[in-house]
Amino acid sequence: MVGEPHLDQHEQDKKLLEKFGYDQELHRSLGFFSTFAIAFSFVSATTGIFSLFWYGLDTGGPAASFWGWPIVFFGQLLVALTFAEVSSHYPLAGGIYQWCRHLWGPNYAWFAAWMYLIALLVTVAAVDFGVAPVFSELFGLEPTRWTLTLIALCFVAVQTILNIVGIKVMAFVNNIGTITEIVGMVGVALFLIIAIIFGSKSHQSLSVVFDTAGTAGGGSYVWAFLPAMLASAWVLYGFDSAGGLAEETKNPTREVPRAILAALIGTFIIGGIFILAALVAIPNVPDAIGQGITVLPWILKTHLPLWLSDVFLAVVCVAIFVCGLAVMATTARLLFSYGRDGQIPASGFFKKVSPRFGTPVRATLFVMVFTAILLIQQSQLARIIAWATVGIYIPYQMVLLASIRARTKGWPKMKADFDLGSWGWPVNVVGLAYGVFMIINMAWPRTPDAAWYDNYLVPLSVLAALAIGLIFYGYHRARGESMEIRGPEMTATETAD
Image (cartoon, rainbow, N blue to C red; front, side, top):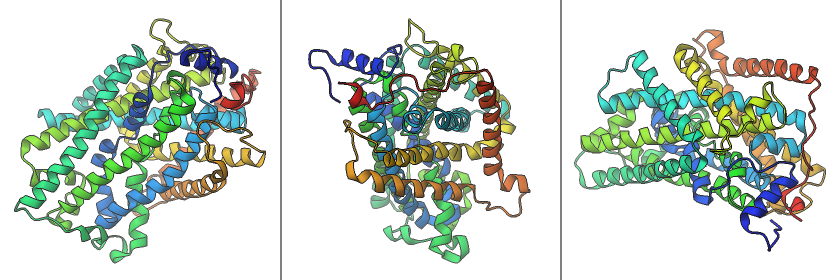
């Protein structure tokens, strides 16, 4: 960023934000590690792998479980590189909403933000409900419906308090959670490797990563990989959350892109080590597939002492907690940014920032109430969680499409701290192709024996969310609300002169 040497970093950041047309209302206190940690927590390899390890085994065997990870990572890396460049040009709260707004226009951005908002609201509830069974098992509680609901609601309440009292406090707790998750994942993987080398229990050789175990058409790699890739696709997203916190990050044009890429790459490395260790530790592949959703605890208990398995369960609880913390923060910032531009009903409510805490308190409380309603109605929640990932992938691809369109019009005219240069075109085009393919793959019906509405749950849910969005959008326009971009439509470097 072209800065002004006579100003300190805080004043430079404030001046840059003013040139985009906004005042510094949120407290800017995050450094690189805290911003990275929030994005890393959102992606949360521990949460995703613990929940979905069984799915990859069941649909594609060990081979697809392993190779799906780097394949999806490569596609998401292209998306993350695009986000890194765009966030360096537009370091504004709301992330995807603001990126689409400046790259294409307000109407396009409205729908990108709407789809993302619905998916995020569902994701908060899904993450917090996911911690309840783990917490129950760790403390020996009977996992009744209302016990699980109460546990999830308690987690939501604590996350809300931490998100309200200040980004610095929230980031501190999240940093501890991130370090715990990294040490826990790597530590358990190393214990598994040691147990395999020096123990007497049965395990697999490294060749297990080429074994489809007869799944998906008698071992066909193609038909095994397509459904099994979903396990990785459901994990490797959320790195854009660093962009949503840009107005709370110091020197965001430099630090936010670094945090986005570090969160994705760090998750890939740590998650990959754990997946490989878990696959090699399988005593018997058919028996492992037969374990279903409990396969990962089964593998751990086979090789590790009970106390160490419990330690890992505690790490999983911490990881899921900070994941929910990060998703709630991202959702509240999106609502705040949406409301600040007057783009939703009750905008005055959502744009309010607490002078004391420097956080969007009302937006955070709305997320809490919405999440609580979904958790109490968990029978309905189970039916709508399935489309949440697709609901996030769609606005992701909208950013890439907007980037491609902007490039046809000569964007970017000036370089930012992170710039793809001549690589921008191939990164955007291939990344968009990957994203569209994964959306189709995730939405593809694979349960012919199920009721038609279950088989087409994902596309039907997307259409329902879009229809509700059209109603709100029509209401907004009917009131004569302006959709114009607030502030100059320039890049960070152009506004910093």
